[in-house]
Amino acid sequence: MTHDKRINEHEIFQALVENAVDFLKNSISEIEKKPKYSVINFCSGVEIFLKSRLLKEHWSLIVTDKDVKLQSFLQGNSNTVGTKEALNLLKNVIETNIPRDAEKSFMDLIEYRNRLIHFFHKNDNLTTIDIVSKQCRAWYHLHNLLSNEWKNEFSSYQIQLQQLNELMLTNERFLKEKFELVGKNIQDKKAQGITFIKCEFCHFDAAQKHEIGNIRFKTDCLVCNSTADFVQLDCAKCGYTTNFLLDDGFSVCENCKEPFSASELLATTFTLENLDDADLTIDYLVSAIGDTPPYSDDSDRYYCLSCQYLEEPSVVYIDEEWQCVNCQTSHQDVRMCEWCGEPIAGYLEEDTYTYGCNLFCDGSIGYQISKDD
Image (cartoon, rainbow, N blue to C red):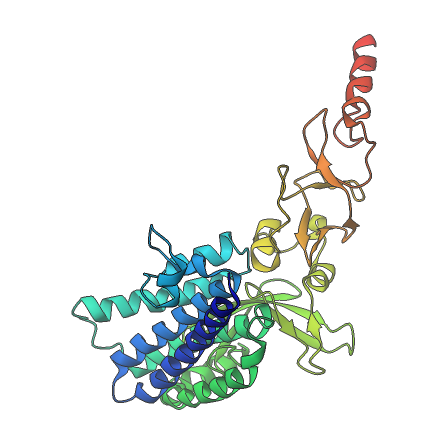
């Protein structure tokens, strides 16, 4: 690629980001008088931000034409991916972490937009409050991606994103009406001993708290109808207890603003053998906060030689290293035993076919001895 083409590609990235910001600004300004167009513009802004992240990886990722040509792309003559395709490429090609709740909130809004555009919407009760609720949740996840997971790629736009975030929060005034309407219901529930906390998405003290275990709880918001899943973590720096939002993968201490890592989450929450929450499984944790492991022909989960937890493989790739979610041991060596075929994490003899893994087998030597016996 020539120097001029690199410049053009960079200019296209800048243009995409600026367009995304413009669409979101227009969405905010139109929410009251033109709610349908507010939804359309908001969805366009989300989609363009996803495309711009793909563009940072490689321009061809956002082109859907069978005959992909750089010049056509630079001239703006190429067909490009939609939101669903962009999310799939971000997850499966770039292997960036898109939380499940983020993907769901984006697609819910896109489907809602499609109904508004292509069909007569029979539900006249879908008011400005409903639209703002959906946009609050989608913006929370998009802003989190742009400010954390993709911070390096969008480092030049952090001030603009913060300004856009402050502008987005002005739409909360439309939710205030609903907050006042459900106020008596909240007070009645509080009188019954039910706890309410500030909602992560609409920022009203309307998230009903449901305790699950000693350190885990779920919430459902009576204003924006959002649900969330939390664990409580003590900050390693100042000791302050902070609610860590699962399915988000990122949180900071509410007191000192120190970031929590996935490792701290695992080290603080549980050991598998003493787990109270039946649905807080390894698979759930990995999907919520895990990283995509380096390319491997073997496995994405391994049994731990340190704690020898045998119910299921407990070593997963988190914070760019292999860690056991049961004993929190970090492992450098992960591979398949050549004798029994099980995925093992921990120090193994080079020749596992002969000596085995010492967890599920003793290799060919052990097999021969057992035969002789």
